[in-house]
Structure formats: structure tokens, C-alpha cells
Image (cartoon, rainbow, N blue to C red; front, side, top):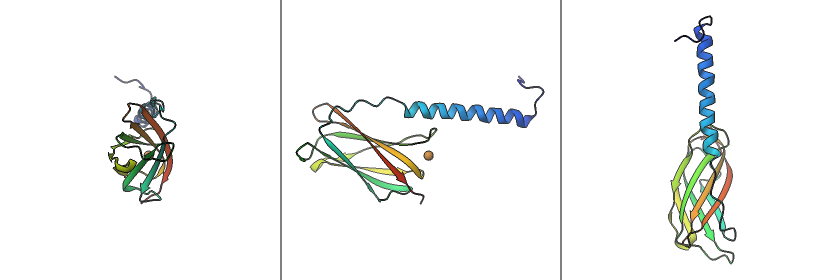
Length: 142
Ligand SMILES: [Cu+2]
């Protein structure tokens, strides 16, 4: 089928590329606009430490420290990490943490691109509640 019989092949290709770009953007925007569960543990503190720091493209270790209002470590949580970039159309970076002793949880990570990122920390606590925090950071080129 020829939708544009009077137009050049390049013109049609241009429109096809535009349509593809819109599709990809829509997919990316949908992904990033997905509803995060609400933070059910606002009294707890979550800290994110990134090694190397300042972050740069390549392998990294992410460390999450959970503590309660008195500063005591929160152990026994299951924590997943999701890294999104501020622009649409990119698959998120995902990781599960291990550890938890002393309230310290770590994950192996990979920064896939330089630019502005936000990392969403979602922790399922031992008491069944969900803690959600977001951290913004900028990753430098390698
Ligand atoms: Cu990107």
C-alpha cells in the first residue's frame, strides 16, 4: 500500500522516522509516569551512597542505609532499585539489593549513560510496609 503516492521516498521515510520517535517517546513516558507506591514509612530515613562518587558511566555499587527515627539500623527489608533518566525513551536500570546487616543494603549497578538520573528506592519492610524514596543525581561521561 502506498499512502503518499505523490511524495518522495525520503519524505515518506521522514514521516516513518517521526512516527517511530513518537511511539518510542510514548513508551518511555508511560514507563516513567507509572505510579510508584506511596511511601508508608515517612519516619524512617533512607540514604543512598554511590561508589564511585561522583558517579560516572560504567559499573558502580549502590549502598542504601536504612535507619529509624532514633538512628538505629533497620534490618530485614527487601530493597529494589530503579534508575531512570530525565529524558524519555530509555529502559530503566534495575537492581535488587543484598545484605541488610546494620541497615546497610548494597547492589551492583551500571550507569549506562551520562546525564541526569533519578534512582527510586523501594523497600519492603519486615513489618510489611513499603518505603519509597527518590534520589536525583548526575552521571558524568566516562
Ligand atoms: Cu539516557
